[in-house]
Image (cartoon, rainbow, N blue to C red; front, side):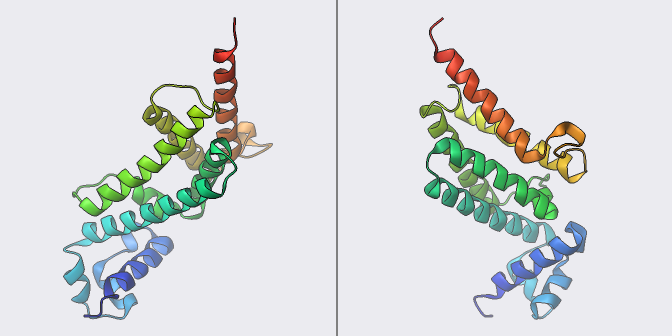
Length: 197
């Protein structure tokens, strides 16, 4: 079996996921779309959940690479954080099925997915810690603060995709503007906490 069969299967699964959600992804349809025998997918993935976990791991790895690129090209941690959170929202809105897959409930243990999730989390926490050191965010546990930022971005993306947030409309802000608001509030709180009484 060619070494790129697994890659072809994951590409086919991504296409099916984007077009029809998790229910559209079956091992048989993935094999058909990838142009391999109906048994070929089972040589790489024991069942559908294993395929979905590999797909989620691949997506998290891509998102982590995109975050790393944002950090490297940004003029500083605060700008990188703003861009990263806006990119996260754009990804969630542009690829809702991938977003739901990555952050869904998992019934199997996948070391590949666990590693990808840990790596992505470490990059985000590192960015938050850098923003704290630069005085753009308050001190404290960077893991918890990263969770707060991600929770807002996640919720804002969900609300935006359902039509409950828009500039000049519901919520009087789009999802990205809410992220900017939170970072602004945190920066002001940080400055005020450091100012002499």
